[in-house]
Image 1 (spheres, rainbow, N blue to C red):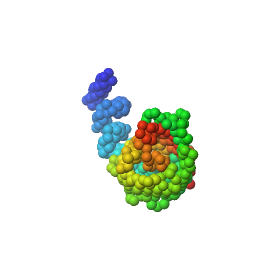
Image 2: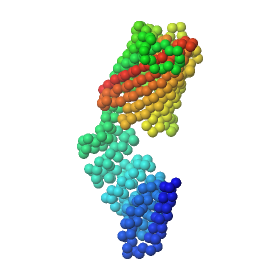
Image 3: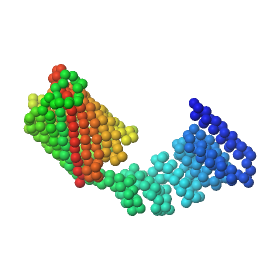
Image 4: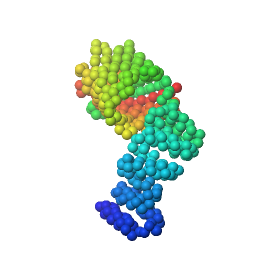
Length: 428
């Protein structure tokens, strides 16, 4: 409340000064007094509560001296900060037109174009600015940022290399080149290992297993991804050791792009052991929606001894700032944990867009997880976990995961499961 009173008093005092200045100051001493008024206007402009007063000061000063460029630049800045980009552009363009070498005006107009998402105007202004100031890295970095946003990778790479000539240690240019090199990689190989510690429990809410009461599960996967014009294809060889039994499974998955914003998931797997479904397949259509939403619909099909199980799948997700928030559900007519499965996940992308940290929680068995044949008959489950992926070098990634779950193996019989997963990926 006290701060509000101070702001109000300040507005009254500044308004009084403007009134006195306009009524009493003679043209002879106006120039010197305008300098003082500019300081007051700049101070008022820094606080959103007095920004309209700063605009009023600038307008009065420009009536006295229309060529006082600092006032017009400050006026344009105030309009931009208030979201009135059209008036900001009008004021700032006047200064740039008559004082081309005045970088304050050029920078203010450039910020206005960027904030109002007028990328074409920003690029046109940047091209002139770079010609006038070829060694000014700020202009080149902004060029790179806009070109990256527009997905103009060839021109952006040229600008990034020019930046590194002027500044060999420029972090933004180095990171951009690293991201492009990774995105252009056509193949990768991943080795994945999962360890699950198991124990029978007396309650469905015991997740953390300290002393394993059952033989632990081991899972090893070798994955190879190849990129084709239609999208990536992933070949997998899985090996599992569970309850002193060993088995292998072969899988092929792909993500073909149908059109911009629409792509498919397809998958097929076979195994000759009961540790895995003897046959599995899947098809899912993903569609980008307005306001950064994405939805999918599809199905999975599993074959285990004496059972053929259809599963219907749907998901809805949204990108929000640096987050991906999603909900996925699996529905099956079977009387098992597969008939009531869902998973909710929140992923936070880090400074490098390929790095992320994710937390998730779910209920029921997911047919997309490392699914063993016996788990299909479980009556229910609850689980949660975290996952962290980081690029240790442009060509290498590490993915770490930790999950906790409790499985209802039969009526009123429960099993705790604490799992650890680690994966190494090499792109080349």
